[in-house]
Length: 250
Image (spheres, rainbow, N blue to C red):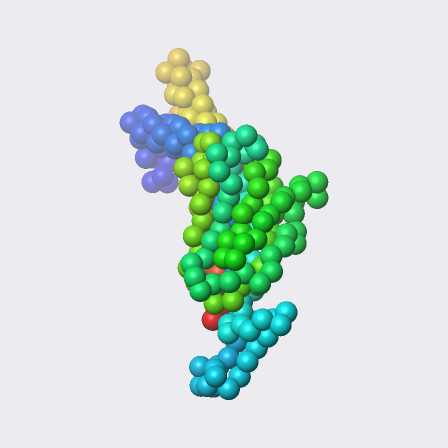
């Protein structure tokens, strides 16, 4: 078999070992301890006057106050890093704001994870402030708000170890640290096996036939493909969900 013949070449196995080592080091660096604060935004129009209707002839009231176009905005705040974000890490609170003429009609925390999480928010005319709180890895909170004449959202916070608050796509899922550790572990094992096989061959313990290298390569590649397929599946589902939310917000 041609693959077996190629794998018998010491130079090829050396190159494979170097590549596997580089992949392992890269994944290790990618999965190092870090803080990551992100948010997911979903908008849905719930009240409004069609553009074909003269707005001077139709009036919509919310709690007795006139409104023109009301949207349901759901903000999910997540700690997607692998380090806790503590109360003392906040130099200034997390703030979501919309420029005028946007006006917040109501805002409340609807869901949290874990249940012991007790966030406090303050809603102003056109901004929502989340008081500093402890967010362990995987913790999240969801804020539901109704906004009249919503416009572009601005997000501001100053947190130790967090360069900026990032916007997540759809479910907000990123490549998990568990996946990165699995990939790094597989790369490390691949490097170790290749080095041991080269050492054994050099010392005359065994004669390379290429079959063992082939099986190891097949297992390694198959495992990598499974993990990458899972990430691709999640990315596709996230993309579909993103466009559904985008269409629903129109």
